[in-house]
Length: 326
Image (cartoon, rainbow, N blue to C red; front, side, top):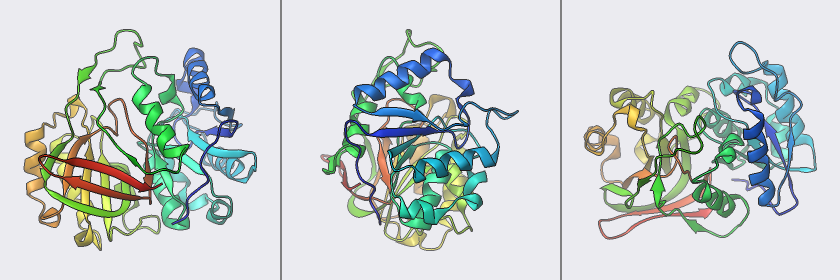
Protein backbone atom coordinates (compact mmCIF):
# COMPACT_ATOMS: atom_id res chain seq x y z
CA UNK A 1 0.00 0.00 0.00
CA UNK A 2 1.37 3.40 -1.04
CA UNK A 3 -0.42 6.56 0.09
CA UNK A 4 -0.18 9.65 -2.12
CA UNK A 5 0.59 12.98 -0.47
CA UNK A 6 -2.54 14.84 0.61
CA UNK A 7 -3.69 18.00 -1.16
CA UNK A 8 -2.85 21.35 0.40
CA UNK A 9 -4.23 24.84 -0.31
CA UNK A 10 -2.36 26.18 -3.33
CA UNK A 11 -1.90 22.76 -4.93
CA UNK A 12 -2.63 22.21 -8.60
CA UNK A 13 -5.12 19.54 -9.59
CA UNK A 14 -5.36 18.33 -13.17
CA UNK A 15 -8.72 17.47 -14.71
CA UNK A 16 -8.57 14.58 -17.20
CA UNK A 17 -11.19 12.63 -19.15
CA UNK A 18 -10.44 8.88 -19.07
CA UNK A 19 -14.01 8.11 -20.20
CA UNK A 20 -16.59 10.74 -21.26
CA UNK A 21 -15.04 14.08 -22.17
CA UNK A 22 -15.79 17.68 -21.18
CA UNK A 23 -18.01 18.05 -24.24
CA UNK A 24 -21.11 17.23 -22.17
CA UNK A 25 -20.51 20.08 -19.70
CA UNK A 26 -21.69 23.57 -20.58
CA UNK A 27 -19.71 26.71 -19.76
CA UNK A 28 -21.74 27.49 -16.64
CA UNK A 29 -21.14 24.02 -15.20
CA UNK A 30 -17.42 24.32 -15.86
CA UNK A 31 -17.18 27.70 -14.18
CA UNK A 32 -19.13 26.53 -11.13
CA UNK A 33 -16.94 23.44 -10.69
CA UNK A 34 -13.75 25.51 -11.00
CA UNK A 35 -15.08 28.00 -8.46
CA UNK A 36 -15.99 25.21 -5.98
CA UNK A 37 -12.49 23.75 -6.18
CA UNK A 38 -10.84 27.14 -5.95
CA UNK A 39 -12.82 27.75 -2.75
CA UNK A 40 -10.93 24.74 -1.36
CA UNK A 41 -7.70 26.53 -2.23
CA UNK A 42 -6.94 24.36 -5.25
CA UNK A 43 -5.68 25.53 -8.62
CA UNK A 44 -7.48 23.80 -11.50
CA UNK A 45 -5.79 22.91 -14.79
CA UNK A 46 -6.97 20.69 -17.64
CA UNK A 47 -5.50 17.96 -19.81
CA UNK A 48 -4.98 19.19 -23.34
CA UNK A 49 -7.39 16.63 -24.83
CA UNK A 50 -10.35 16.95 -22.42
CA UNK A 51 -12.52 18.85 -24.92
CA UNK A 52 -12.13 16.36 -27.75
CA UNK A 53 -15.12 14.19 -28.61
CA UNK A 54 -15.99 11.28 -30.87
CA UNK A 55 -19.23 9.42 -31.56
CA UNK A 56 -19.20 8.10 -27.98
CA UNK A 57 -18.72 11.52 -26.32
CA UNK A 58 -15.21 10.36 -25.52
CA UNK A 59 -11.92 10.59 -27.40
CA UNK A 60 -9.13 8.38 -28.65
CA UNK A 61 -7.27 6.00 -26.39
CA UNK A 62 -4.05 7.79 -27.30
CA UNK A 63 -5.37 11.18 -26.19
CA UNK A 64 -6.74 9.90 -22.93
CA UNK A 65 -3.56 8.00 -22.09
CA UNK A 66 -1.44 11.03 -22.95
CA UNK A 67 -3.41 13.28 -20.60
CA UNK A 68 -3.13 10.76 -17.75
CA UNK A 69 0.60 10.30 -18.28
CA UNK A 70 1.14 14.06 -18.49
CA UNK A 71 -0.71 14.55 -15.20
CA UNK A 72 1.37 11.92 -13.38
CA UNK A 73 4.59 13.17 -14.96
CA UNK A 74 4.08 16.87 -14.18
CA UNK A 75 5.68 17.64 -10.77
CA UNK A 76 3.40 20.66 -10.32
CA UNK A 77 0.29 18.46 -10.39
CA UNK A 78 -0.56 17.12 -6.92
CA UNK A 79 -3.93 15.54 -7.67
CA UNK A 80 -5.93 14.24 -10.63
CA UNK A 81 -9.69 14.61 -10.94
CA UNK A 82 -11.77 12.93 -13.64
CA UNK A 83 -14.28 14.93 -15.67
CA UNK A 84 -17.07 12.38 -15.28
CA UNK A 85 -17.70 8.65 -15.69
CA UNK A 86 -18.91 6.88 -18.82
CA UNK A 87 -18.33 3.42 -20.22
CA UNK A 88 -14.81 3.02 -21.55
CA UNK A 89 -12.02 3.82 -19.11
CA UNK A 90 -11.09 0.12 -19.16
CA UNK A 91 -9.91 0.63 -22.76
CA UNK A 92 -6.84 2.38 -21.35
CA UNK A 93 -5.53 -0.24 -18.97
CA UNK A 94 -3.12 -2.10 -21.23
CA UNK A 95 -1.60 1.17 -22.51
CA UNK A 96 -0.80 2.81 -19.18
CA UNK A 97 2.72 3.26 -17.84
CA UNK A 98 2.29 1.87 -14.35
CA UNK A 99 5.95 2.41 -13.50
CA UNK A 100 5.46 6.11 -14.20
CA UNK A 101 2.50 6.15 -11.82
CA UNK A 102 4.36 4.19 -9.15
CA UNK A 103 7.34 6.55 -9.37
CA UNK A 104 5.13 9.66 -9.28
CA UNK A 105 2.39 8.79 -6.78
CA UNK A 106 -0.45 11.27 -6.53
CA UNK A 107 -4.15 11.40 -5.82
CA UNK A 108 -6.56 10.13 -8.49
CA UNK A 109 -10.27 10.64 -7.76
CA UNK A 110 -13.48 9.76 -9.59
CA UNK A 111 -16.30 7.20 -9.45
CA UNK A 112 -18.65 5.09 -11.57
CA UNK A 113 -16.75 3.98 -14.71
CA UNK A 114 -13.53 5.32 -13.18
CA UNK A 115 -13.67 2.30 -10.84
CA UNK A 116 -11.89 0.26 -13.54
CA UNK A 117 -9.06 2.75 -13.88
CA UNK A 118 -8.63 3.47 -10.17
CA UNK A 119 -8.71 -0.20 -9.20
CA UNK A 120 -6.29 -1.22 -11.94
CA UNK A 121 -3.78 1.40 -10.83
CA UNK A 122 -4.03 0.14 -7.25
CA UNK A 123 -3.68 -3.50 -8.34
CA UNK A 124 -0.65 -2.82 -10.56
CA UNK A 125 1.22 -0.33 -8.38
CA UNK A 126 -0.09 -0.56 -4.82
CA UNK A 127 -0.93 3.15 -5.04
CA UNK A 128 -4.10 3.98 -3.13
CA UNK A 129 -6.65 5.69 -5.40
CA UNK A 130 -9.99 7.26 -4.52
CA UNK A 131 -13.67 6.80 -5.26
CA UNK A 132 -15.22 10.22 -4.93
CA UNK A 133 -16.63 13.18 -6.83
CA UNK A 134 -15.75 13.98 -10.40
CA UNK A 135 -14.91 17.47 -11.58
CA UNK A 136 -18.48 17.61 -12.91
CA UNK A 137 -19.86 16.79 -9.44
CA UNK A 138 -18.55 20.14 -8.20
CA UNK A 139 -20.85 21.95 -10.64
CA UNK A 140 -23.77 21.12 -8.32
CA UNK A 141 -25.30 24.32 -6.93
CA UNK A 142 -27.37 22.87 -4.06
CA UNK A 143 -26.67 20.01 -1.69
CA UNK A 144 -22.92 19.88 -2.32
CA UNK A 145 -21.81 20.42 1.30
CA UNK A 146 -21.59 16.76 2.39
CA UNK A 147 -19.73 15.80 -0.78
CA UNK A 148 -17.31 18.70 -0.39
CA UNK A 149 -16.68 18.09 3.32
CA UNK A 150 -15.97 14.38 2.86
CA UNK A 151 -13.69 15.14 -0.11
CA UNK A 152 -11.68 17.37 2.24
CA UNK A 153 -11.60 14.78 5.03
CA UNK A 154 -10.25 12.11 2.71
CA UNK A 155 -7.98 14.04 0.35
CA UNK A 156 -6.87 17.11 2.33
CA UNK A 157 -6.21 15.55 5.74
CA UNK A 158 -4.34 12.53 7.05
CA UNK A 159 -6.58 12.09 10.09
CA UNK A 160 -8.83 9.01 10.30
CA UNK A 161 -12.47 9.93 9.76
CA UNK A 162 -15.89 8.40 10.18
CA UNK A 163 -18.33 8.27 7.26
CA UNK A 164 -21.51 9.67 8.78
CA UNK A 165 -24.96 9.55 7.16
CA UNK A 166 -25.88 12.69 5.25
CA UNK A 167 -28.84 14.69 6.55
CA UNK A 168 -30.57 14.51 3.18
CA UNK A 169 -30.20 12.64 -0.09
CA UNK A 170 -31.45 13.11 -3.63
CA UNK A 171 -31.93 11.04 -6.75
CA UNK A 172 -32.99 13.81 -9.11
CA UNK A 173 -31.31 14.80 -12.38
CA UNK A 174 -29.70 17.81 -10.72
CA UNK A 175 -27.54 18.60 -13.74
CA UNK A 176 -30.68 19.23 -15.82
CA UNK A 177 -32.43 21.46 -13.29
CA UNK A 178 -30.21 22.99 -10.63
CA UNK A 179 -32.98 25.04 -8.99
CA UNK A 180 -35.84 22.59 -8.49
CA UNK A 181 -34.21 19.88 -6.41
CA UNK A 182 -35.97 17.11 -4.49
CA UNK A 183 -34.19 16.34 -1.22
CA UNK A 184 -35.32 13.47 1.00
CA UNK A 185 -34.58 13.06 4.69
CA UNK A 186 -32.04 10.36 5.41
CA UNK A 187 -32.07 7.97 8.32
CA UNK A 188 -29.07 6.13 9.73
CA UNK A 189 -27.31 3.57 7.57
CA UNK A 190 -29.06 0.19 7.59
CA UNK A 191 -27.64 -3.01 9.06
CA UNK A 192 -28.34 -6.32 7.31
CA UNK A 193 -25.91 -8.42 9.36
CA UNK A 194 -24.23 -7.57 12.64
CA UNK A 195 -20.52 -7.71 13.25
CA UNK A 196 -17.24 -5.85 13.38
CA UNK A 197 -14.44 -6.09 10.82
CA UNK A 198 -11.31 -4.33 9.70
CA UNK A 199 -9.64 -4.76 6.33
CA UNK A 200 -8.51 -3.39 2.99
CA UNK A 201 -11.14 -1.29 1.24
CA UNK A 202 -11.86 -2.59 -2.28
CA UNK A 203 -14.74 -1.44 -4.41
CA UNK A 204 -16.69 1.15 -6.29
CA UNK A 205 -19.14 0.53 -9.09
CA UNK A 206 -19.91 -3.20 -9.10
CA UNK A 207 -20.53 -3.85 -12.80
CA UNK A 208 -17.39 -1.85 -13.67
CA UNK A 209 -15.29 -3.65 -11.07
CA UNK A 210 -16.42 -6.93 -12.59
CA UNK A 211 -14.86 -5.92 -15.92
CA UNK A 212 -11.49 -6.63 -14.28
CA UNK A 213 -12.21 -10.25 -13.38
CA UNK A 214 -9.64 -12.68 -14.72
CA UNK A 215 -7.16 -9.93 -15.55
CA UNK A 216 -3.96 -8.64 -14.00
CA UNK A 217 -5.89 -5.51 -13.03
CA UNK A 218 -8.09 -7.19 -10.40
CA UNK A 219 -6.86 -7.00 -6.79
CA UNK A 220 -7.22 -9.84 -4.33
CA UNK A 221 -10.35 -9.90 -2.19
CA UNK A 222 -8.49 -11.46 0.73
CA UNK A 223 -9.22 -9.53 3.94
CA UNK A 224 -11.26 -7.00 1.96
CA UNK A 225 -14.08 -4.78 3.11
CA UNK A 226 -16.09 -4.40 -0.09
CA UNK A 227 -17.74 -1.07 -0.93
CA UNK A 228 -20.18 -1.70 -3.78
CA UNK A 229 -22.76 0.38 -5.63
CA UNK A 230 -24.53 0.47 -8.98
CA UNK A 231 -26.71 2.86 -10.95
CA UNK A 232 -30.30 2.84 -12.19
CA UNK A 233 -29.56 0.46 -15.07
CA UNK A 234 -28.88 -2.34 -12.57
CA UNK A 235 -32.19 -3.69 -11.34
CA UNK A 236 -32.29 -6.37 -8.61
CA UNK A 237 -31.70 -9.48 -10.72
CA UNK A 238 -28.71 -7.89 -12.46
CA UNK A 239 -27.24 -6.79 -9.15
CA UNK A 240 -27.78 -10.31 -7.81
CA UNK A 241 -25.83 -12.00 -10.57
CA UNK A 242 -23.14 -9.31 -10.68
CA UNK A 243 -22.56 -9.73 -6.96
CA UNK A 244 -22.55 -13.51 -7.27
CA UNK A 245 -19.95 -13.27 -10.04
CA UNK A 246 -17.68 -11.22 -7.80
CA UNK A 247 -18.12 -13.74 -5.01
CA UNK A 248 -16.86 -16.56 -7.28
CA UNK A 249 -13.41 -14.99 -7.35
CA UNK A 250 -10.48 -16.56 -5.49
CA UNK A 251 -10.26 -15.41 -1.88
CA UNK A 252 -13.91 -14.28 -1.86
CA UNK A 253 -14.36 -16.55 1.15
CA UNK A 254 -11.93 -14.27 2.97
CA UNK A 255 -13.98 -11.09 2.50
CA UNK A 256 -14.40 -9.50 5.93
CA UNK A 257 -17.29 -7.09 5.40
CA UNK A 258 -19.63 -5.48 2.90
CA UNK A 259 -20.84 -1.89 2.57
CA UNK A 260 -23.41 -1.04 -0.11
CA UNK A 261 -24.13 2.40 -1.51
CA UNK A 262 -27.63 3.78 -1.85
CA UNK A 263 -29.52 2.59 -4.94
CA UNK A 264 -31.28 4.90 -7.37
CA UNK A 265 -35.06 4.69 -7.36
CA UNK A 266 -35.25 3.66 -11.01
CA UNK A 267 -33.36 0.45 -10.18
CA UNK A 268 -36.43 -0.64 -8.18
CA UNK A 269 -34.14 -2.09 -5.53
CA UNK A 270 -35.89 -1.85 -2.18
CA UNK A 271 -34.43 -2.57 1.26
CA UNK A 272 -36.49 -5.75 1.41
CA UNK A 273 -35.38 -7.04 -1.97
CA UNK A 274 -31.75 -6.21 -1.25
CA UNK A 275 -31.89 -8.11 2.02
CA UNK A 276 -33.33 -11.16 0.21
CA UNK A 277 -30.55 -10.97 -2.41
CA UNK A 278 -27.87 -10.82 0.26
CA UNK A 279 -29.41 -13.71 2.20
CA UNK A 280 -28.80 -16.01 -0.80
CA UNK A 281 -25.03 -15.45 -0.66
CA UNK A 282 -23.39 -18.14 1.45
CA UNK A 283 -20.06 -16.38 0.92
CA UNK A 284 -21.35 -13.44 2.95
CA UNK A 285 -22.60 -15.38 5.95
CA UNK A 286 -21.38 -14.16 9.34
CA UNK A 287 -19.78 -10.92 8.14
CA UNK A 288 -21.05 -7.39 8.86
CA UNK A 289 -23.16 -5.81 6.09
CA UNK A 290 -24.19 -2.14 6.04
CA UNK A 291 -26.43 -0.64 3.33
CA UNK A 292 -27.83 2.71 2.15
CA UNK A 293 -24.48 4.43 2.56
CA UNK A 294 -23.82 7.75 0.82
CA UNK A 295 -21.77 6.77 -2.19
CA UNK A 296 -22.61 5.89 -5.76
CA UNK A 297 -25.12 7.50 -8.10
CA UNK A 298 -27.37 9.31 -5.65
CA UNK A 299 -26.32 12.57 -4.03
CA UNK A 300 -24.46 13.49 -1.91
CA UNK A 301 -21.48 11.13 -1.87
CA UNK A 302 -18.51 10.45 0.36
CA UNK A 303 -14.93 9.87 -0.80
CA UNK A 304 -13.12 6.66 0.13
CA UNK A 305 -9.69 5.12 -0.53
CA UNK A 306 -9.38 2.10 -2.83
CA UNK A 307 -6.67 0.09 -1.11
CA UNK A 308 -6.98 2.02 2.14
CA UNK A 309 -7.81 0.65 5.57
CA UNK A 310 -11.32 0.67 7.03
CA UNK A 311 -13.07 -0.63 10.14
CA UNK A 312 -16.82 -1.20 10.19
CA UNK A 313 -19.18 -1.93 13.05
CA UNK A 314 -22.71 -3.09 12.30
CA UNK A 315 -25.13 -3.35 15.21
CA UNK A 316 -28.65 -2.29 16.00
CA UNK A 317 -27.47 0.35 18.44
CA UNK A 318 -24.18 1.29 16.79
CA UNK A 319 -23.22 1.58 13.13
CA UNK A 320 -19.79 2.91 12.30
CA UNK A 321 -17.65 3.17 9.16
CA UNK A 322 -14.20 4.48 10.04
CA UNK A 323 -11.57 5.14 7.40
CA UNK A 324 -8.31 4.47 9.23
CA UNK A 325 -5.67 4.85 6.50
CA UNK A 326 -6.33 6.89 3.41
